[in-house]
Each structure stands twice: as C-alpha cells, then as structure tokens.
Image (cartoon, rainbow, N blue to C red):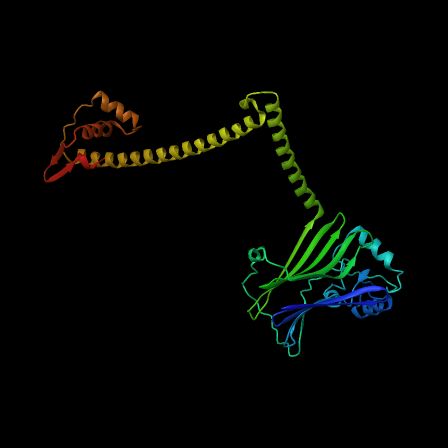
Length: 373
C-alpha cells in the first residue's frame, strides 16, 4: 500500500488532490473552489430548479476505483439530481420568505415555483466504469460496526464537502463525504444533514465498507428525522433526570456535612420507600395467585361433592341403607365446606366420609366410600 499527495493553486484558491492505494483499489479525494455563478445558472436550468445551494462544489469528488476501471464516486452534481425539483417538501412560514428572497437572484427564474428548498437528497453514490463491472444486489448482511470500533491504525483520512446552504439564515443544509483507510479495511460515510430552525432535523446516511481480500463492498442507507419539538421534549426529560441525580447527591453531602444519621438522609429514605413499595407489590401479586388457586381448589371440591351427593341419593333410592347419625365434628366439617345440599344428602355424605372403608351393599352392587375423595 502507498499514498501520494498533490496540491495545486487555482484562482487564488488552494485546491488539492490526494490519492491512496489499498490493494487493487485507488482512493481519490479532490477539492476545488466553489462553482462560478454562470456555471451555477446553467446547471440550475438543466436541473429545472429555481435555485441551487449557496456553496456548491461541483468539482469536488471522492472516488474509489478498482485497477480494472470500475468503482464508485461521490459528487455534488449527482447528489443534487436526487433532489425533488417539483415539490416543496417542508412547508413552513420561512420557506416562502426564503424563496422570495431568491427570486431576484441572477440565476433564478422570474416566477418562483414550489420545489424542495431544503435540497434533501437520498444520494448513495455513482457507479463508474465501462461495462458496469460492479453490480448492486440486496443482502441481509450488515456492516460490522463493532469491528469498526476496534483500535486500528488509520493509514489515510479525508473529508470532502459537496454542497452547503444556510437556507437564508433559517437553518443549514449540507452534504459531505469522508473516508478512513485502515490496514485491513476502509470505511466511507456520506451524510446529508438538514436543520430547519424550529421545525425539524433530518439525516440521510450512506455507509460503505470493504475488507481486504473480499470481492465486494457493503453499502447501507439510513434516514432519520425528528421534529424540533420532540427533541426539546427529550432534552427536558434528560434535564429532569440530571436534576434528580444532582439533588440526590446534594442531599447526601448535606447530611454527611451536618453529621446526620444515614437513615435520616431524604435520598436514602426515598430509595428505601421505593424498595418497600416494590416488595409490597410483589407480595400482593403472590396473594392474588394464592387466592385464585384456593378458589379453583374449592370449586373443584364442591363439584366433586355435588357428584357424590347425586350418587348417594341414587343408592338411597335403590337400596335400603341405614344412615348413621352425624357427629358434631362431621357436621362442622360439612358447614365449613359450604355444603348447601338438602336433608338426606347432607346427612349421608359425612357418614360415608367418616366410615372410612364402610361398604354399602344392595344385592350384587358394591360401593366403597374410600374412592369418593
């Protein structure tokens, strides 16, 4: 691997071009001056857009090219081609003011029509090479971000700005690309960043990763957007969390400085209260589970007793059985179980239960009470 650096002067602006070789790949980062007004006017007409970004670097490029000629590059012109030239995507009060301010510019049309004045683009790079020897296919494989976090020597790094606009002091819209080359791989990030003051923040990222020895690159695209109001709400939550922790520390320090017992520390008291509430909630949950199991068990017992009563009534009707009088303890047991059965059935059951292995005989029929429970 080797790198080469060349620098040249053009119209008082210090332009530069850097080349770096990574195996069969050549990385080129070229930076030049902002496009001239006449060139911007011509480009705006070609793209059918009333206006272009204030700072447009049409000759800036970051290119990754294989020795066979194919590869991928990132430039401002192709990025702008992905901007919606027919629709005003962000409809806010300042958009109309911004467009009117540009209406008299030398490279704007007489009538300012709706278009995406934020220059939002989902540009992901431009494939290069004769015969298009590089192809794009979908894959479930993801870039190993953990591997990129590993400490590794950076052999080459550069960042190239493609365009930037301050949206007439109502925010910023810009896109830039940067690359870093390590001994075992290179990683590229193309980021479009938009901030419309008081309205939203939007980020479109394209990541490109290649490991030495592999015959492919991985490219991932992601887009994120949040309303400013939502971000302020998240910041408020973070501020409240910080205030809570700060007050807790102050309570602890104040208690220590005044020689108060630890158990009188308000912060610790609150922590103990939280623990007690959590334990109480857990116990209540256990009690509910026990109560539900108890109810299910009693319902099962009552259902079984009901079946037994019907069976005993059947035997009483078909046999001549002498019923033993109920003892006081058996009567209490029956009442405890909540029996609501009538007369004879209520009397016979405890007798059968109390009799253990007592047999009720009628003809050839045999019934053992021990099988009832």
